Length: 282
Image (cartoon, rainbow, N blue to C red; front, side, top):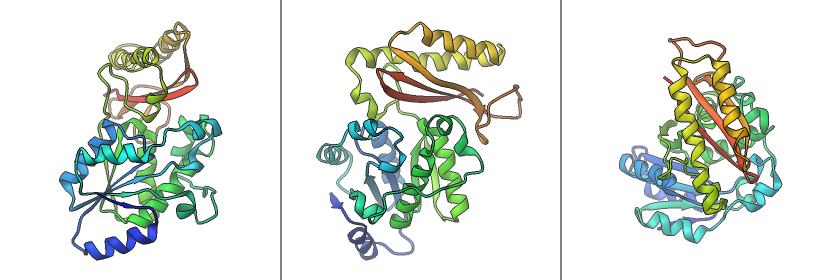
């Protein structure tokens, strides 16, 4: 398995091994790889001539310095997990200086308002950091296809908008959420949960499944009230937000329209560890 720590070395290598007809799959990650990440890599391997996985904890998308500091990092373990799938993956694990070239600040982006909903309301500037790093990685790797999971659905829609606005000729492939046996959406942050917290966190997905069931028959206000009650009765959980929104615009659903696709979004703190999840309601 090839590992590159500088963009220059990676770009030079790609020039040697690829040509205009080579399809290049790209899976950007922040490391702490789990089966969800590996499923994206497997999909890329099946559909492209080459696959690159980036492993980089991006400082400009963290609103909480403690969260950045505690974010799990273990490059050796990540590479070992990738090797269980294939030795043909190319790993790009740059330093902050290699990516930001001495200027570790986020650029400002306008994603037609997508950045102001949900995560944007609770994490100011977060999507400027996301846009900055994804744009930079796309410029370095120049992939044919890039793979993202649906768990970060708002981020997925924003990256699609980034590709549109920056005129990148990159196909964004959205992949289904990979879940643990109890339904908890796989996340690198799950590793910070205690075994009991991890088991109890199954309530997040169970709540979303019930919302999906209620959506067809109950008023929106009653569904929202019910979700708030669920987490008020869970002393170790704090609901950050619950939102039912249009899949395309991410605007809050005010009334049910059969011609629109809606999705439920949720963010919950478990002992100061923030977990997000989502589910389609149509």
